[in-house]
Image (tube, rainbow, N blue to C red; front, side, top):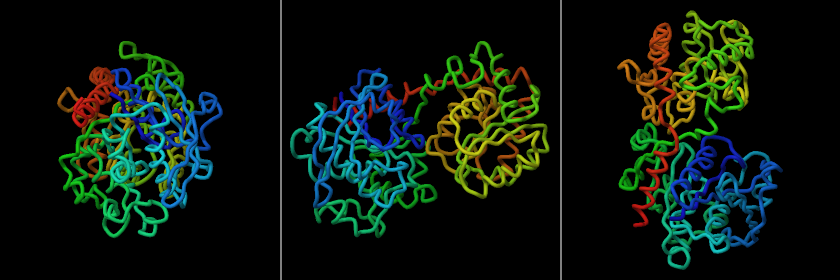
Length: 473
């Protein structure tokens, strides 16, 4: 079976979030299971020279964008056993940053059409095109409108994965003629709630719609979580399924990770104590082995639950505890935590921005990982924390609910709370700190956490089953 994985970003070429991790790891896991999976993505200005040196030029073609045709260069690269195709157009992609440009609709309409146009030129006709988020949502639409009745496209099926339903590709009707170029009789495919909606078109036209956790697949049928798409999703519930993402266990491995202070394993946790000491030192906190360290690695925004943390933060600091915080985001929260770090220098270690090395060191050096999200389609941080023996505190939503179970029953791997309420979160932190004081019980909890299998193996098998279902292979 052949799968073409279409994404707007993929590790190690370009990344801004979890999608890049998925696009870098899932194809590798599929190939290990004898699925011929290749990745196609834009060639952005941020792709490093080191990665460009791995690329070879394949061909150039022109791609229709409504009434005009645009240049499209195709490059190929081989990384970790996976073939990547990078779509080049200097006008659309040679810019700072991946997203947030005034013409994003046109940029990703071009990319979506290019994915289909290059298939005859790359010697790879997929059985399935696996599309991801709104930037590739027009691929199933264009396939339906222009390609599906001709060779080599007539047997291609499509899967569309919603990584975050908040971002749907919503635009005004003025784009219909000049940018999207759909036949008038097909324009209804992307017409939704008085605007153009790319994601709605993908939900309607794809053969299967997936989300990145079973709980999130249920949640997005509720208006509270759906950002207005619940009515169209309810029409196509038969297409919808949830598959939890995995993590790359080669990248996140305390036994081999060269970004942490000292390697360790589930059978020898002494290195974790050393990582804690060095983390405290790096963030100018007192080096105390007995104090519980709570780590936060996140975007400092409301939907990540940071407003809950802010609400009770000074109450939490009354306990014998330290916080190590890494992230950036809304000014309100950056300013708050900066103030807390100044007022409580012995309890709050803060680094604003994003530092991958420090992120790994917090995963390895903290005792507890706090992730009280308002919504979380899947979440990777809680699974990474488990891998390093750092016990997650999470709200029961999305993928957090599917990957973390409360240890109150003696078999769980973390601490959970249900209501989006600061004091419910606070009470859960108190429970975790009480658990930490039981040294033998905490050691067993760390061992349970590190023994959890959150690799891509199970996820890849679930996707393969889905591909076989729609292709009949």
